[in-house]
Image 1 (tube, rainbow, N blue to C red):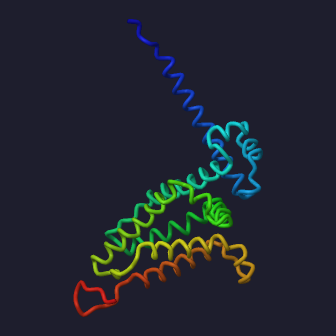
Image 2: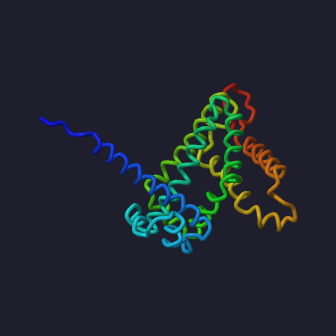
Image 3: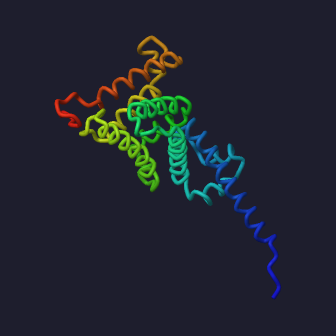
Length: 229
């Protein structure tokens, strides 16, 4: 029996790599275009031109403009999820872990304005695109699970209240971090002081950290190990 030659396998691998490179290039271009022009203004033509590809390739890989936008949203959530995993707060040191999470959220939104811009765009559309994503809840569950681990460790050590909902603490952190970043330009004009300086951001981080810790800390109880409610 004549053995099959291996070049065909390598060729398949090359084609797969080229296809993935094209898909990645389209996603990268779409992220830039949607962040700049919004969903309505981010045309397929602008995206294909930025990606240096053809319109038909976008439809081939993503099916539609909406399919591409959903993939972009999944991509920005995925990258934040990966970045958050690298900061690796230790739940067994609950106060420091919460400080780490807060520091990460504020810094990440500031370093990735496209994340904020794209979510603002999707909120204008009432979340109808991301609601069709099968992966969105996967990424949010990771973040909430991390907060749950921290709160449970803190309660077990008698440091934190035991009646807190992880989702509520998560929302408290991300709302404070997100609102500050997404509205920094208008707030700076409204308040008459810049919120974009390193000092202003540091002050906000300290304030948010102090506020969150005040919310989660256990009240003193006469009974050891018992959290007052």
